[in-house]
Length: 88
Image (cartoon, rainbow, N blue to C red; front, side):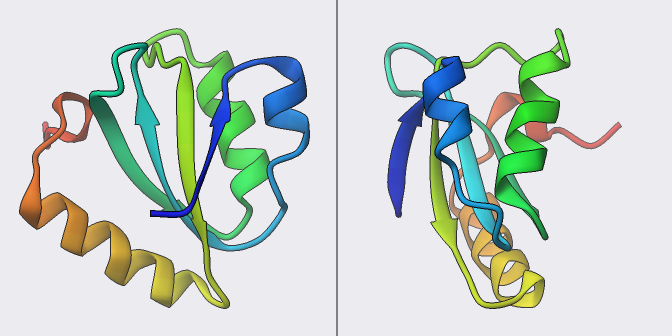
């Protein structure tokens, strides 16, 4: 796991605009959602404005490519099944 940021304007502002995987967490540190993206900064801001996903922290793992990020996300999803990653 990479670095953890708070879900505050300052925390979201310093997240890098790089490909990577991320974990949204609640206040107690429980993982709510695993994801991957081409732009960590943009995607975390999108989650912030999506009222269906309430989180207080985000842990990110920057990668060189989205393919690497997808492998990390897949591995995490096999290990744990966070509540917001459920398939419809």
